[in-house]
Length: 137
Image (cartoon, rainbow, N blue to C red; front, side, top):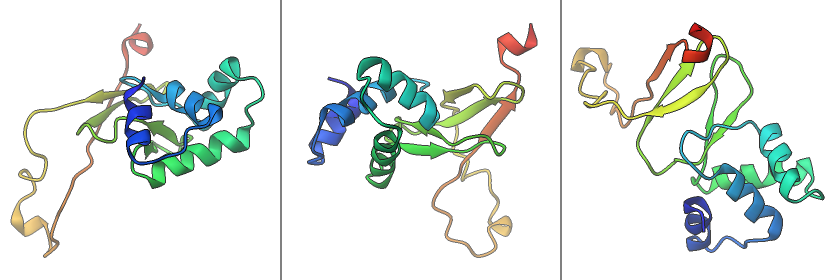
């Protein structure tokens, strides 16, 4: 059973065949699929799955905090199942490929107190950008 599916079951999420297929498609490292990509892959396994079911299922997973929506540079939203593993993203500026990265150090510690403007800062999102090996070639 996939890590994502296991987490969802642990939250009492009712697992139907459609929901199971969506969770299985999203499972893994470096998975950052659009809703349309999730639908296409899910339909290979379960041809009768509708686009609306995929969108609704993704919305439920995001609401539960088990999947994160990732938006980069106005591109389509992507869905990241690694919501419980602290990480940042490395994005190819040309093709949009996204990889999970785990830099060392605390990004909150690098924000000086005078730059916090009185905010009680609780988190930081860092996106690294560059060209992937395929786009460099």
